[in-house]
Length: 34
Image (cartoon, rainbow, N blue to C red; front, side, top):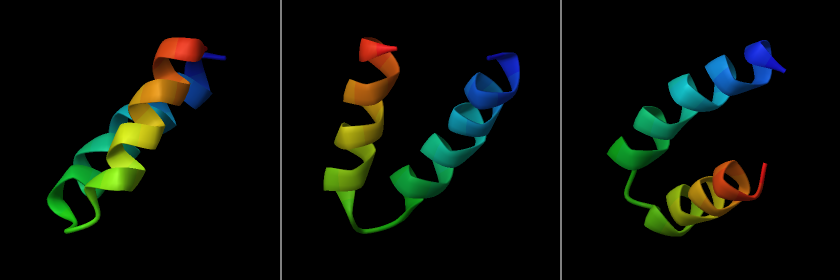
């Protein structure tokens, strides 16, 4: 589990920098759900 959280923490900033914010919102929703 900790590894998944670490991966998400590293993926979120990368997605936030990208123009696609829908993916960022999706990740946030998944993060909250988990």
